[in-house]
Image 1 (cartoon, one colour):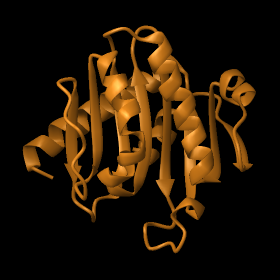
Image 2 (cartoon, rainbow, N blue to C red; image 1 turned 180 degrees about the vertical axis):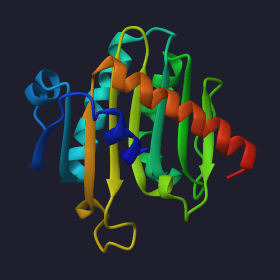
Image 3 (cartoon, helix red, strand yellow; image 1 turned 90 degrees about the horizontal axis):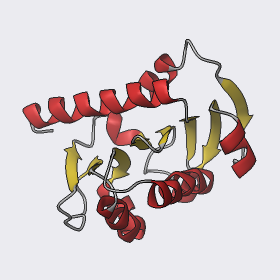
Image 4 (cartoon, one colour; image 1 turned 30 degrees about the vertical axis):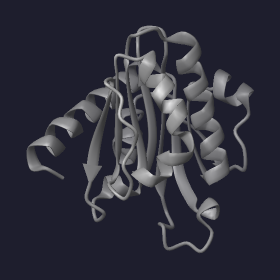
Length: 183
């Protein structure tokens, strides 16, 4: 998904922020598409901005695709995603099945094999008529890192409707492919 995001943005203005410890709300709002390198706390904050916007702007419409690498990483935000599932048409959660997410009629789980490339990616893609945003990040260190919150990620964010639409279509294709192969 990360490489696809960079490819999808190649015809657009992509700003490179370099290494950052935090992405400000101003940068998030004013720069439609950017890439950066960061650690877990910054990704959590950017994810939270997207999650909050979903809760405030959508009403039973749109789809959300979220990748946690391992499903157990969803545990601390499960309640938030249950609420997002309440206000979304459908939420798809991707991850290695090391934990069982709570059930919700609007939430589907896409189980990944640990050795797949997608199992090293963190993403939140929100695609609705009222809100479009994507955060996609590639874990450079993996879960063997002694301090999980210190892991480094190459990251990409976009609120450009065309880019987000491409990423949502790619996520739908992944769901179809992974369902067929029982990954």
